[in-house]
Image 1 (cartoon, rainbow, N blue to C red):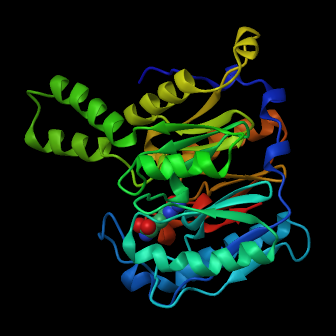
Image 2: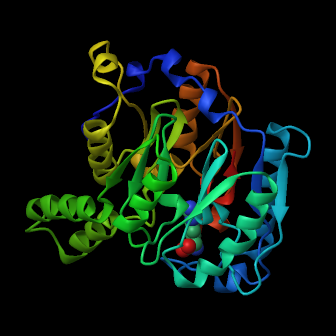
Length: 327
Ligand code: CIR
């Protein structure tokens, strides 16, 4: 595959972490019916509930080790909401402001109330989504300068607009994730017109729109993003670069979004968490090539690394960012 971006473009100074310094985190315990009933895009391999709980608790411990004493608040799982551990989807917080979301999956909407209470208790001023708007936090990418919002099966244009209304000073750009996925698939289908039916099916599956924007891309530094080195990941990276609000003067001086490519075979590792000078990434046991690439990046810009296994949460489409709200 053509390499469109390279770590050699990275300017360590641009990977500044000021916007990703946090004192608090909300997390939510794993529901007893997580393994049996969490929403899954692929219900293939069964979820090992015990292992899922261990992976979730390692995640919470990692955050506790990175935040000040008492900074992590763990809410109990919401009754009847097997996905409530994926708390990121319920609120977007930047500074002392928040937007409570209206999750795209109706079964998840009851998760928001307790998160609203916890944010109020932390003195965060929260807005709500208007009727008809849907938004999952997993679709909201904050670069430290601006928001990108994936228009996905969970998030609609009204949801993206609600984000703009809740954070008036911050630029919001909607990313047409489903349309970009369809256009990548069309381009490849033309090339595979004479391939076997099986090859065509595999390709369609790999080009399908992911659950969320952040299934493909996440922040690893200011204006610096890890992106899956897949056809769709590259398409999204181009879109972000072209529509980014990096000021013209800064662009002239060579500043723009920087991308760390996450090898195709380990694409889910493009979802990482940057917190207080540490990059939390998927473990090399699970996704070795990605851990290598992201580890190299972290070394180059002076970030520490924590590796976590997420295999069981990933079976329910969970990723690293989705298990916390940081502020
Ligand atoms: C869902 O389908 O809503 C959950 N099973 C997974 C949500 C993952 N959320 C995220 O990555 N932000």
